[in-house]
Length: 276
Image (cartoon, rainbow, N blue to C red):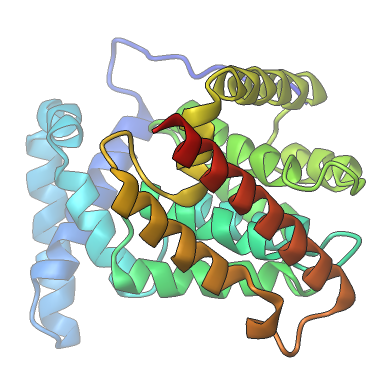
């Protein structure tokens, strides 16, 4: 399925007028007292002001005014559809054909930190991830809600697709491709788009492997400025985290994954100790 490219008209389209009215109504709703009459009056006033200031709507978008409104709405239980789709899809891919591995959990935590989520957003993302491991999600509905987004649609689609492909590369032996293509199709993304994202991620991984020391530091969770004491401390923390004795309820597959991780950590520690 090929995604249509948005066309930006020079004249004010009905969609722009509807967007201005929606922004005005939402602003009125947020600023209004809790009673129904005040909400209606504030919403109507917001629509009127938005129509009068319609030429400044895109300027407000660039300044981040709508982002603040969206943040308030998200706290009222209306999260961004791309964020919900991403973490729900990650849950499904992690559970695909087997158990969820510690490496999958690590990647989700890394993504949450990279996105700068608050504690509220983090708990919501974890809830979506767990929901993705169940048969509950309605994927066509989740995908349709993402396709209704106008601003930064391509950037958000690429972010979601890259996160899904990156998690799939954690366990190459698993046949996650059919599930990944199905999820991508729900977003309106083609198989060629998925393949191009895989190629880009693999090239990035190969470039990282060309610097063994940097790869070892990333595995231990330290930066280039870390000294020998920092390396030893990081190694001990990672070993304590991944040691099978700390996983009494783990399955045989999870214990095997932990043992492989310990071997990688040991190799990384020896490489950095010898290099320094």
